[in-house]
Amino acid sequence: MADVLAVTEQRDGALRKTSREVVWAARQLADAMGGTVDALVLGAPGVDAAGAQLGAVGADRVLVAEDASFARYSPDGYAATVAAVAKGGGYGTVLVAATAAGKDLAPRIAARLDAPLASDVTGIRIEGGKVTATRPVYAGRAVQQLRLDAPLAVVSVRPNTFVPGSAAKSGAVGKVAAFPAARVVVREVKAAEQGRLDVAEASVVVSGGRGLKGPEHFALIENLAKAFGAAVGASRAVVDAGWRPHAEQVGQTGKTVSPQLYVAVGISGAIQHLAGMRTAKVIVAINKDKDAPIFQVADYGIVGDLFEIVPRLTEEVAKAKAG
Ligand SMILES: Cc1cc2nc3c(=O)[nH]c(=O)nc-3n(C[C@H](O)[C@H](O)[C@H](O)COP(=O)(O)OP(=O)(O)OC[C@H]3O[C@@H](n4cnc5c(N)ncnc54)[C@H](O)[C@@H]3O)c2cc1C
Image (cartoon, rainbow, N blue to C red; front, side, top):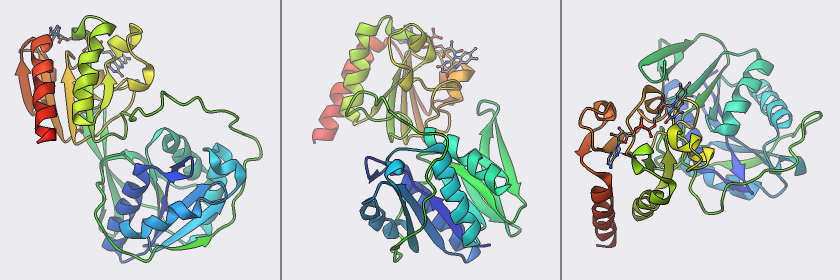
């Protein structure tokens, strides 16, 4: 029961960044219990090539389930396949990334396995021989500790929380049976604009709020994001106003982000916004109101007019990056 199954995620045959994080988290857990890590890769035929890199982040074995219908996330098919592998492998824990697909998949796996689920966790460890997970609750105002007192548990881990190191395990690739979807088939995925970093996965996020006064001023945010190599995020106020797409919304009803650096520009810091970003490692806030609630969670606060500060900051960041 010390062995861990790490479920990876691919897009167009390439593993997503979160896959390495999940395998790394699984490695830490397995090492604490003296177990092994199997990484499961689901995809269309040929996806096994992507799995070959997972030994470097701690996979002892890479199990590949191939089916043409697995090119895209397939709710029923993925859940049936993961559950079958989990049942047959004698694992104690199944780890999934808490991405959009992972948030859909994890409860399906838990239901099929009749196993407890800890979702969107930011920490995981062994306590008294049991897997113990840490997760923010009540919009990030409290932290919950969950002890998973069952022979098999499912845990989804928040993207960007487990930064992969190097583990140099063999990562030998082998095939397992795929159970393609019988009922639900994903026919089309409408991708967001090409080349844009996903706010939920980026390690630096620059977000703009109503303080920008209008959609035309978001160029300031985009330029700063470009200088950092960051993703652009937004508050709900500006998404509701139609200034930005919902895919960029950070917060309780948007995406949860946990980047190394979060820059909040012209965002007041309402509790629903904080729910989506307060686990960022470093928070920088730029706001003209010194009493704005965002400053209560910020590591660095700049009180002033964003229209003056952001262009100067952009210039300095670009200079620092170039030099
Ligand atoms: C059920 C529910 C769910 C919600 N979910 C979310 C969510 O997921 N995400 C989210 O973001 N919100 C969410 N909200 C909305 C949330 O309560 C706030 O209304 C919203 O976050 C405010 O957005 P804002 O900070 O951009 O705007 P405001 O609150 O209007 O703040 C604008 C800020 O800009 C500053 N400012 C103005 N001009 C300048 C300037 N020139 N220079 C510098 N600073 C300036 C102001 O001082 C102010 O602090 C939710 C609300 C509810 C009820």
